[in-house]
Every structure is written in C-alpha cells, then in structure tokens.
Amino acid sequence: MQTLGNVQELEQWRRQVAGGPLHFVPTMGGLHQGHQQLLRRAAQPRGGIRPRVLLSVFVNPLQFGAGEDFERYPRDLQRDGELAAAAGADALFAPGLEAIYPHGQQEITRIQVPASLQRELCGRSRPGHFDGVATVVCRLLALVRPDRLLLGEKDWQQLVILRRVLADLGLPVPVQGCATVRDPDGLPCSSRNCYLNAAERQRALALPEALAQARGQALSQPGGVDAASLIDGVRERLLAAGLVVDYVQLVRAHSLEPLSRCEGLSLLAAAVRCGSSRLIDHVVLMSRPPIVAIDGPAGAGKSTVSRAFARRLGLVYLDTGAMYRAVTWWVRHQGADPAEASAVEPLLQELDLRLSSDEGEVQRVEINGQDVTEAIRSPEVTALVSVVAAHGCVREALTRQQQAMGARGGLVAEGRDIGTAVFPGSQPTGLPGAAAARAGGQHRRTRPSRFHQGRGPPAAGR
Amino acid sequence: MAPLLQADDAVELVTDGMDIEAVIEALVDLFRQRVPEEAWPDPV
Image (tube, rainbow over all chains, first blue to last red; front, side, top):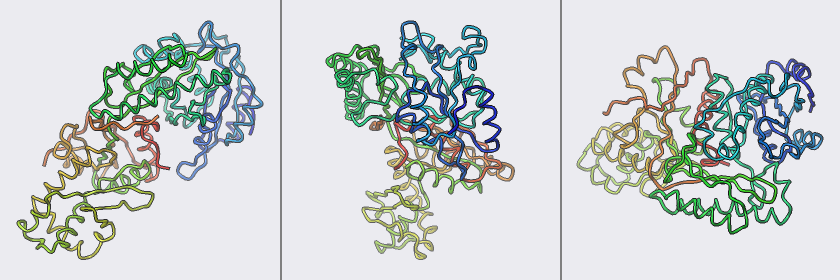
C-alpha cells in the first residue's frame, strides 16, 4: 500500500492506476473495524473488475466546533496505514492542511448544507459541523475524482446530507452506505471510543441497549408506535445509566423531519456524553419490508433482471407465471377438469400460495403446504396453464394471493403485474402498456419504482 | 385491467449499452439509496 502525502503524489498514483475504477473511503483516521469493513466493501469486484481502493486520513478542522475534540482526536498514521493495508486499501492519502485548504481554512469556498437537513439530531448541537463535512468531502472528491464513495450508515445524518449535497451539485459519484459495525459488546465502532475508560465503556453500553429495547417495543406494536413513548423510554434508560443525553429523536430516515409516530422508514437516534466522549447511535425502523416494482418495455430482460435483483437483496420475486402453474398443478392434483370454471372455482377456496427465496437459484413454490417447485415445471402442467389461467376466478384468486404477499412485503414485482388492482392503497407504477411497447425498439429502460412502505407490522434493523 | 401509471417517486434508469450485471448493480444502488443495509441487510 502506498502512502500519498500531498496532491502531487496523489496525482502521480492516479496516473499509475488510470483506466480502472477507483473507490474512495474518506476518514479522519483513528481507524477501527468499521473503517476496515468500508475498505473491504470498497475492494469488492463490480462487474468482474476489482477496483482500486483509496482512503484518505485528514482530521478536518472545519467540522469541529469550539471546545470540541479537534486537538486530541486520535492521530496515528502508522497504525492507520497497517489497518488500511490489512483491509485491502491500495493507497492512503494523508494530506496536510495546506493541501486541502491552500489559502487557509478561512479562505476556502464553503458548502452550505440545506437547513432542513441539519435542523435536527447532531446538526442541532453541532452548528456548522455538516457544512464543514460537506466542504471537505467536496474538496477531497475534486482531488481524488473517484468512481464511488463509501460511507458508514453509523453517521446516518452525514450520509443523508452528503448524498443530497452531491446530488445538488450534480457530482456523478454514487454513494454506497454500509451498515454500522459493532464491537462484540454492542457498542458501535467509533474513533471516539478510545476516550472511554473501562467503567465509562460499561455505562456507554446503555446507548445501544436502550435503542435495541425501543426497537423491540416498536416491533411489538404493529399499528405504529407513538414517538413520545419510544423517546421517553430511551431517555430514561440513558439517564439511569448515568449518561448525559444530548438528544433522543425519531425522524424520517431520508428527510430527517421529526415524527410523532413510527411510519415508513424512520430513524430513532440518540447522542450522549459519557465521560469526555460524545457518542451517537441509532436504530432504523421500517413499517414493512420493501416492495420494489420494476417496469420497462417488453423484451428488455425485465424478468431476468428482476429475478437476479431479488436474489441479490434477499427479496421474493413475484413470479406470477409460477403462481398460475401452481394453481394448474393443484387443479390436476385434485382431479378436476381444468377446462370447467365451475370445477376449478371450489378448489380456490382458502388457497394458500407461497413463494420463498433461499440461497439457491430457484425460488421455492408452495401451494396449500406442498412444495411444488419442481412439479410445476412438468410438461403436463405446461400444457394446461393457459386453460386454467383463462378462468376469471383463477385470476381473482391470484390477485388476492398477490395482495397477501404485498401486505407481507419483501418483494420485487414487475410493473405489469402490479397496480391499484393488486396493491390497493399503494401508488400504481410503471408505464402504460402501449407506451412501453412503443418504446421497446428504441430504448431498454428498467423502471424501479417506489419502495412501498405501508402500515404492516414493522420490521427493523440496527 | 387498471391502467398503469408511473409512481410519483419512480426512478428511471436508462439502461442503453449496459449489460445485465451493470443493470442489476445500478438497481441495487437505487434500492440502497432508499433502504439502508441496517433496515434490510443483504442476504448472508
């Protein structure tokens, strides 16, 4: 791994590695397992190509307020270099102040983050902090010119803000957020954890514990839980552990607006002082597993893409073809005449059709408790599917099944399969069929649509 | 059949010239802009 101490060395290294993708992890040093995970993720091949990974180590004075820990922030470049190299970094950029702010930090052109995104959470108690973060990250992006930026979800507000800043400035750098990494005791990895002595660390554990408890409370109340009761519960537990509470807030995950009840995707976040450290942590609450609708012109490989996309994210692909096949198999299995609607209809009472994803290439299909994954591919079923699918009662029954699956969430559907008819209460999606067909010859477009967040039982992560 | 309309928050991905793997990766990026790993982790 090379260490690059100034802009000239960075330029030289960029020329050496020109041609391939460059992934970038900006840090302030004090590396820990969370940073190492970002570096490992940055090094993962995309499209069969292993990118170069650069991390920067720069303790940015602009993002520290008066009386904060700029002076004593951990600085150990040798140790950082070892940890970065072990995690697969190709180069470490450790610029001096003059490289980042050539005319001094007062003279640099600054980025001003929208007020709405820094009104709550850490923005409230650290005025100017996120402007300083955005300014240095933009400066670093201009110097490094990476193809991808990796940031931790741990600093959620920072991630939301930087995504917005890059979008607003039209900087074409995809931002990849990576889940918080925690130590075995549950405390999220942070460079500032090194300030904690053993007793303080023990007390600090109340932070992740209180948030996890609140998450459990939210999960147990599928109707949506009141923000005040969650917040008060967390605050009490933090105070009981002897922590000084800066804030406990429930906000919308993307707009960061305060919420009075859990809805959609929300963030329950807290900041505390413990000894001389300021610590932050959060849990993400989701009212229902996501639903993704993908639409596009016929012949664009939508099914292939949708299936692979679903598998990659652990979502179920709403395979309507397999559902019709399963009903056809059931009709045959029951010995009914597939051509007679009156014979088929009674077999659809209390139909229970389930699709499930697993590690394999093929989704499992179950009908009324029987695994028919392979059976539905038989020539006998293939020959009869169109006959069975022609019955109105079959289409209605399958629409009900799809609604039930939509309520459970966690699916990928092709646009033509969903709409108000299948998922009432959610926005229909996609292109009118005729328009899609017309566009077919000229463009291949895939339209992922809204990630429907309904009022179903909450699912949560942390 | 109900007519299908594009949702207000639909995102258009122009896939001209992209191979299937690139399209899937772009969709995963779009998904991850909305759904953090902490809410819906990648399968192990």
